[in-house]
Length: 142
Image (cartoon, rainbow, N blue to C red; front, side, top):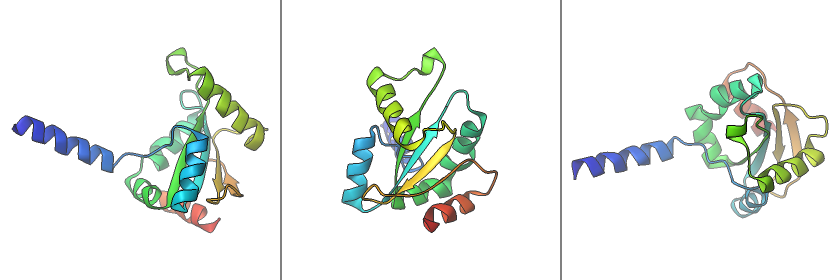
């Protein structure tokens, strides 16, 4: 019984500190409209792009950003991994490529776009070595 309670509490702690990335762009857009939250679209090369990996570790996984994002944002990552073990499903790859054609034609990585709840693009930025609080201010400024 104690073991089950410990596992349950551990799962709750993990879920409270986890980033909630949506599984599809359409879901992200729909959820943003319903919840009246900004959308953050991130173009990432999660297994090859060093600035993308740094952005993940320094910002997206930071507890302050997670708390902010859970309250104010809907997140979607359009990932373009290169390693076979990280390969996306054909449908996910096709969806991400369509988003890249529309919002990242120059192929910048990482490329972060901020949208209104109604999918109007408000701004965009790349990785910078700045504190998490500056990223939050930047997103709030759009």
